[in-house]
Amino acid sequence: MSDPRLDLSFDGAVARMTIRRPEKLNALDAAMVDALVPLCRAVERSAAKVLILTGEGEKSFCAGGDVAAWSALGAEQFARHWIRDGHAGFDALARLSQPVIAVLNGHCLGGGLELAACADYRIAERHARIGLPETSLGIIPGWSGTQRTARRFGPQLIRRMSLFGEVYSADEALRLSLVDKVVDKGSGLASAEELAAIVAGRSATAAELAKMLINAAEGEERERVLDAFAGRIAAGSDDLRAGLAAFREKGRRSGD
Figure 1 (cartoon, rainbow, N blue to C red):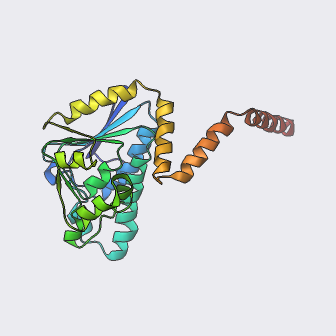
Figure 2: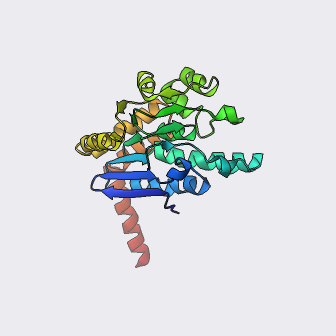
Figure 3: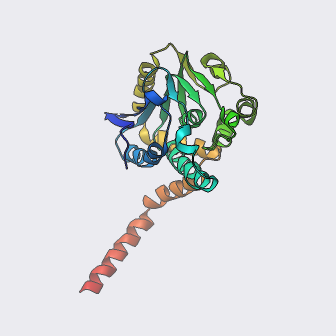
């Protein structure tokens, strides 16, 4: 499944995913959310060592979920599809093996902040504004805006944004550790590419393992991390090679 409004490209060790819906401030609809999982799988299986995530234009990185896409849904459809499908896509991004750099080239609100929270490093252009305005519409930050964001940024900060409507400038977001770096308008992508070059020059295996351990420490995908580490050890063992050899020999004899 693909969607032309989520553009994925590769340039050597660097993958780039760009939200191309500037006329809607790069808001996500259901088809775009559905496309996140296969796109992340494509990155996962590629030779890329790092992913840069950004939005098209200069007004908005991502305005979150398209209100027109979810406002007409019934309660059951909203919970079972919009929320759960969003979690599947955002989880795939947060759990990507490769480090993810988000370039907040404009406003980052609601689901946009939930999306940015899936990244490992956030670069904000100076004109960006960051917040979680969902409760003003009578809804909650449903794509892990009360869970992953609380783990990564601290629950009190999420309370201030979600319950009290605080919206932060890029410089304020840097001070509050919502973002890792602030740059001038229009220079976010260049800054991300410099950072991506540093990542690309490091060990992909070591970076993957370090990211998995950090994710586990945050409570992100702990079970998969344990299984993956155990699987790596087992896959390199003499016992596995001996077991496979015995299995093949047994198959050969049964075929005689």
